[in-house]
Amino acid sequence: MGRPAGGLADFLATVDSGEGQAKSLLTPLVGQDVVNDATQVFCLDYLLPVRDYREHAAHLASSRRIAPDMQAEPEALATMAACLGQQGPIPNPQHPLRVSGPTLLIANALHDPATGYNWAVSTAQQLGRAGRLFTYGG
Image 1 (cartoon, one colour):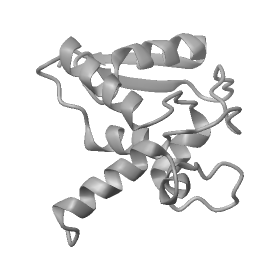
Image 2: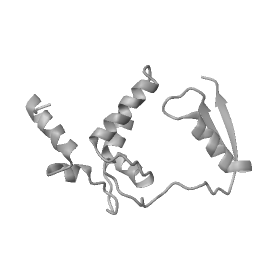
Image 3: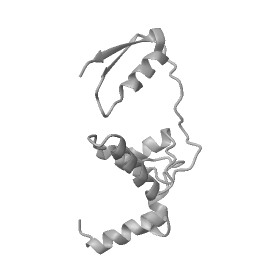
């Protein structure tokens, strides 16, 4: 949009190389006080060891081979791309849940491609008696 096809090709080659302008595009916002991009929040919580665009493209190709009928969500692709080149350690690593208070209800569908059922099961197991899992068969 606004860039000629050659400009897009040059941009992608620059990002793929990790040099020049790409360094700023591939540097996560870890350590900064303000995060304006929601995908960057994900990068603060999870370490995605994808070094460059080639590796990212290889993951996508593998996903297409494993599940050819499942399309990747645009948000997931944007998040993975935003975290390219991310270095550890991450400031807010995932950890087992520690919950006190009222019982929590976790609801999840069996076949929801965006929120894997295994995540809900794991959350319910971590909550133990503090949580209940409601499973929708759709």
